[in-house]
Image 1 (tube, rainbow, N blue to C red):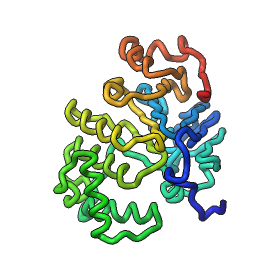
Image 2: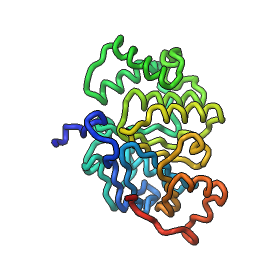
Image 3: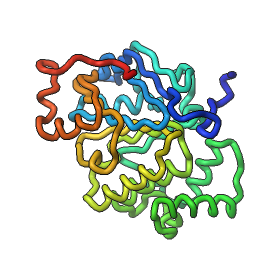
Image 4: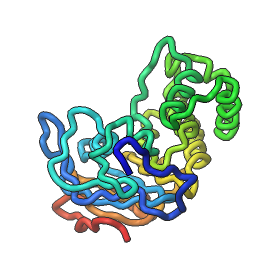
Length: 272
């Protein structure tokens, strides 16, 4: 496969295949040279992995490193996406290869309608030009899947949107781009209970056996609506413990203090 070729998309692959392999990842940013201190993780198609941890533990840094945000530097370790060295792929190539990031704080794009933004994004990711009529037909199917009002996509991107609308718009982007790996960076932050339910329902509708999900969150509450296959507790830049969905309620009861370095379980590394 040459550098200009994208990795196979979900339609060409099988559920259960390994998507992402992170091994002993160390990374930081200017001013904080080492935020991640040896993260190891394996995500397969159809799996939902929740990464939980307190502020400053490295959760968002992990998402930024994976998506190639400028300023973040890897000092040690490897990440392979669909068998390829992720760090050899430019940011735009990662998107075309099926990686998607839902932002914690989605930005406004004045003067650009949601429908035009999504059409341009899909054309860029797929490498195919879709007519306006054909795309809107496709978009209506995705909006129906998510229970969204068509009026929303005629508005400018995130301009005047409520917090819940911004996050639902992120999930609509996910539905339109049809990624293989979705990284959701604190999608639940700032949402009231109704918005949280709506956003969670959207994620559940879009994520299927071909999609791997990395769900980054502070709180157990979103896990009441999205059941993860695995939960990883990230403390001080490394995974202090990995387990199943039962780990969420335990965290809710004990808090993160019981997982900190002075009393944490050892890092389990990649899951089998």
